[in-house]
Length: 193
Image (cartoon, rainbow, N blue to C red; front, side):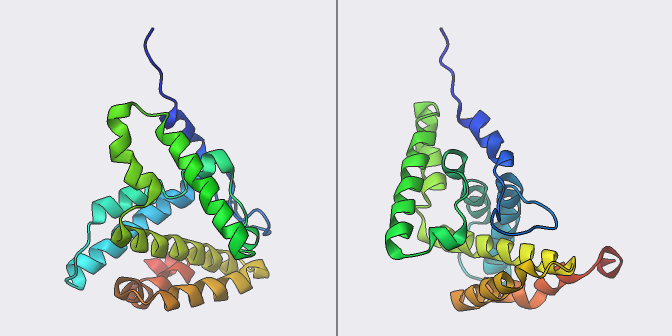
């Protein structure tokens, strides 16, 4: 009997995990949509870092890592930020749960592919990880901007918190993106043309 691998079928289920569960949303966002946007943003940040700022970056690796940055949530679900970061003990315990989940996902791949997926699921490259983390936070901030644009004040505090976190990262590629690209997300379609 031929061996079957469930990894890709599970990854496709990211679309069933809703984000921002404690917030009243004007439009819902699932982990698959979020991961796609984080990949787009991580790729952009790495390109900015490499091609505009002249610093070392691997845009393709950043985009790939971003696609899988929340893959562990396939097995754990999306724990709301206020709970996940409530205190250092909970944060550390959840990191351990994410690691176990990522290892379980790796076991669902053919052995020959595990080595290639491991750095994507475990974020082992510090340079890639910093760009993916920035893109992840940037995606959250963009969600806040889009919700505020609809008049949903539920996201006002989160918008301030995510913007503050972005500024505190002090990444030149992120600062460049925020200065040159971020305001476009508050525009309507006619204003973008």
